[in-house]
Amino acid sequence: MVSAMKFEMIVKGPFDLKNQSLYFGGYPQMRADPDSIVMAFPVEGWEESVAVMLRQSSADKVEGEVYGAGDNAARAWNQAMATLSLDVDGRGWPEVGGRDKVIGGLQSKYQFLRPLLFSSPYESAAGFLIGHRITIKQKQVIMSRMSRELGKKIEVRGESFYAFPDPHAILSIEKYDGLNDVKIERLHALALAALNGSLERAYLRSLEINDALTKLKELPGIGPFFAEGILHRGAGLVDAITHDDLTPYAIEKAYVLPQQPSASQIDDISRRWEPFRMWALVLLHVWLRREIGLPRRPMLRRK
Image (cartoon, rainbow, N blue to C red):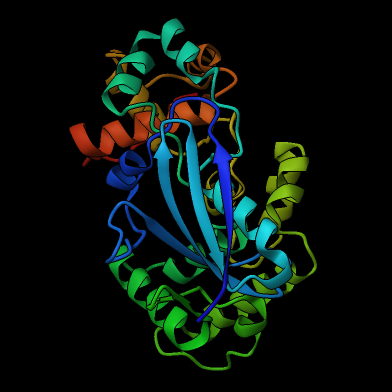
């Protein structure tokens, strides 16, 4: 039987694990404990991969068990907490809704939903590279198969979970069904960057945003859009704004504007959301996708 180390986190600010799973999904539940979720991922530092079983025991406490971590159990736990945005003190999050009625309404509707991140910037970048020019479903199938064939299998109370392959495993790939030679070459470059520490969450968060984006765009196949995705949803910046085309459209619809806002208008509106601008933006994107739908017409940023 695989031993586990137990941890707990006192949650700062409103949080509901079931609500997070409802809107973001993706994590399997334990058959014997449907209130829990399980994350499996390579631990930054790339010495091992783990499975973390999590459940919310009370409004202000999340408990969990880390399987397969060895000496890196605490690091794996902290990585799981960051994935759920629980490493952030969210006690000031409701105040944003008090300043901005639109965000306040969305906070109430979605129960103060926090962003769900990728397990690491490395795994985020791998997903972008694998998914380039194929459908989301095709990407998911390839990544799931890679996890089972190349990743680590971890047993949790008699159930098996598979982590995405760590950088060492990615470097061993010469040919793989569903990945062309260019994608494999780019994944190799990504794996080397991860191994030298330049993709770790703490490192990317420590940089100025433009510096971090510049470094990410040095990776083969990573342009401005992918770089922002890796930084904001992989590293997990809290008080920042992305420059994708969907953001002005979401703001236009939520604030009932006559047209898409300019960059300066977006800056003005988003100042009300500080210091949780990315959390507010994620709420807007969730609302847009679930309630309004993506636009059928091309979206052009207004200057």
